[in-house]
Image 1 (cartoon, rainbow, N blue to C red):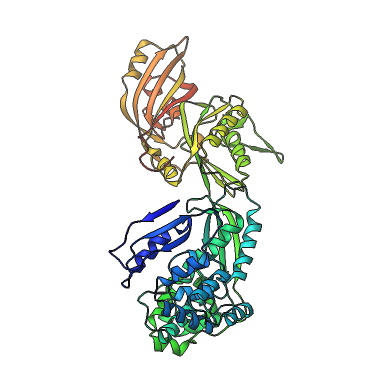
Image 2 (image 1 turned 180 degrees about the vertical axis):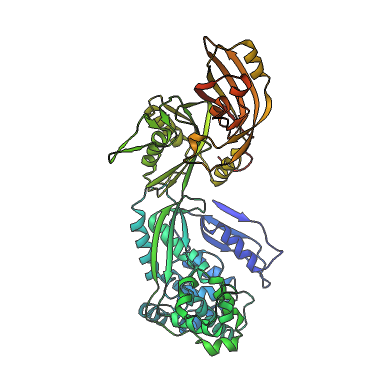
Length: 568
């Protein structure tokens, strides 16, 4: 199957390279049929990969290099490798901007260069790369190091159950490599003619192309920036840190983290944060003229004995699940409610909790170390949560099992299992994967909610139709509530102004009546009824002129504006 890219006549070969690069990840061979002297490409044909693990062959690599001046490219390879650079670093200084050549093995790159110029000293190139690390990348882009890193990642990945998709995070290369790149860049500019109008490919980009491909191939995964599973690789190189110390001593002003930082602190003070402040190092290097740089650094960079060291960390990003829960029991709390009794934990009058019913099942499903239950508000243990339920989010951290991207069926099955094991105490609905924006939205609208309650009220006398009419006449009534006595242990003292939007009351038998109350979020309904020793004004007790108390309370509706951002 052939894929044709339309003629590109508005830009030179750099544009062609980017077009080829756009499809290189899925196709193995790029054939440039005709490239004019000005660099315009008349047509590009790309043959589909027959094997997803194939990489560009030597002819394809040679053609990618030939997009640049053949003579200059060959001379650049000769200069970089003679100075102790590796083959992939030579590609960076040509510069080759497509991914395929970097993904190819050193043997294929050598064969491609042999096709371009058989007089290159390939034996000496191989000997240099085998005996010492590259002077530019410090071994990061050499086959031996890439193989070691890929094997280490493979071992770490075995601890996880993932879906074949990975997000690879390569840390910034050792900061000393920035100095060495600049040194080799100056060496190439002075030696190779004509000068290139393009900057060299950065080491980080080269590592993403080559090392990233090697790791993905080794662990059998494809790359996806949206994956929940990611592998972090951090590099360091202690041997060349004295080069960094020289730069710090000559460019102290560039390394001031802020106005309060002194410029005469010891070098060790900088070492802990320089790896995280790559932009400052790059700025300090670029601030030096070529002559100034050559005074404080070796051009070309000197050879070193040790290869970069690395650390690998594989982990799963926090998984967020959202839903709504309904609570049907007055002996189930929202969060675990435990009371210490002679050193033993007892649950008192609580049978279970919403969190204990929902969270363990999710931790088990994702083999997670931690899970945090985040409800959108709360209700007392003796209050049922009915209607459409209360929104909640569960944040799952430290998971070993990575959910696949098609999670709807798995999450739906999980919802069924939670409800089955809930024993009729709690029911979960609308369980789904979500994101941080949804969590932020849920928190932001907490104070904007209107909640509707149903409560059974007992008076110390027989209620009358006049009492019903008094309550039903309450519309958008403002009340002032001091912090209730019963929540002093967890709430700070204060006065809160709330609005009771409507009340719909009916008579029951004896001393009882039932009322449906719609109020602003955060209203203490029990205190609204009994007055809390005069701390809520006005209250039903003060309006009716008799003692009143709540015997049963349910939340029957939580109304809020529809979500406008985030969420799945």
